[in-house]
Length: 575
Image 1 (cartoon, rainbow, N blue to C red):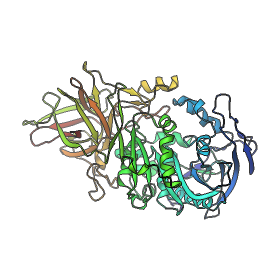
Image 2 (image 1 turned 90 degrees about the horizontal axis):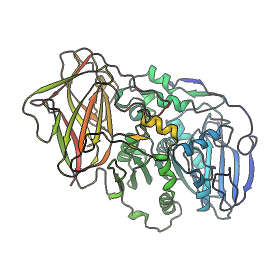
Image 3 (image 1 turned 120 degrees about the vertical axis):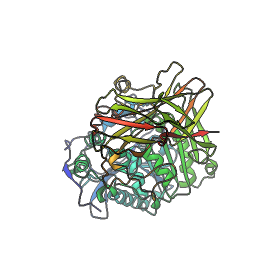
Image 4 (image 1 turned 45 degrees about the vertical axis):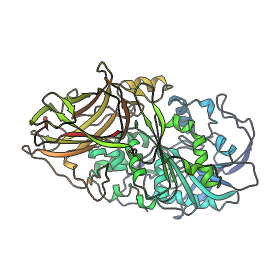
């Protein structure tokens, strides 16, 4: 299922040597109760059967290698797969395990047997599950070239599901679990779908590489996935997404192959999202909203994905026990949506029950932008005005405010409707940020995890780590790629085709829609909502050492409000 447009480069070679459990080679052993990987890791509460470097042959004859942890029992058990190219047990694993404490997770609560961003075998084996750690195609000792976020990865994962289902120690029930890459791969595997895949639990991911992360809003933002590419090792080639982005700037069949077919995902899903991740938020919400499954749950937390994943395994256990073991534990009564309401002052509400997102008890409200006094109002300005900023000056932006005289709560999908002109260029790269200001007019921001490593903390506070430091709801759009496909759009989110350019003329005033990332935010009396618009990113890079976005802007941007120009911010307000 390889796409002929795929561009490869040589993968980072890794040096052969002892991994965490010795030289590479198929081996079966027992890890005894009390075993621990280090003096700081959690010891095993019972014996585990550990089988490593197991060869598995995929449908095209490629061999990948996997490790399996399982409890000592005669009863067949369900299996949880952590699918990714991240190291399962070679000499690079320490790089990933050391990240755990840097992102705020207490390493003493984990056995350090888990793959990076995957489920902990100590916890899950103690609950009667096996945990499978594959090295995906091309990574480390697995054969082939490293490819990802496409149908090939889906097929490979499906083959592993069916291989596991045939093992005599397996009950035939298989789940997928994990966050980030381990979440993205779940959508592609579930879209196959393999017969023995019973449920998935994607924790913060995306399902459309072009729209969700690489070219969000049509504006190239390649550095994050370029950094991820640098974390992968193998003996052959690796898919080069950065080169592909430069070669194929518009949507084509290569990028379409990296978008999940939502109609094929029909199995039960427990999805987890946050408002704060510039990498994962939009993709997780959009995928959950559009998949065909009738049994789907969404939980929106107020932390960061890594600590949230570590802290909510008991909740996931309830979901898995219900579907993988048939236990009548009341999971079906769990609200379809549990969302958070942020106040940006560490007094958030969490696990608010709802049957949909936006919640059913919301109304649509519009706040009109007024260039006469740079305000927001529920009444459209009668007089036409305009405001101008220079798009190439990084400190220039225009901001519109409204200070509330009562408590207001918003939960849903914000969007901006703008009328704009580019007199000096045939394109505009537009960036928007919705923020909350305190009673003194200071913009509020919050670190998504208080226990961050000092380096992470400093970089996040210095505007280079927006995944970890939440400043508000953001959106972006390249106006030359503004075409919306109405057939694939939903009530809340427009679907941009990104397959052709529509350049502007200097005299042209056009209408554009900019979707902002989902929001759950409370404003108290005296606090201010601000929407800012600029020609550069108002957030900075997603995570260091990633660089920021380089826009395609020249000269002045003019924004029109009032009169015939119904420039407005649309929100869903709780009633």
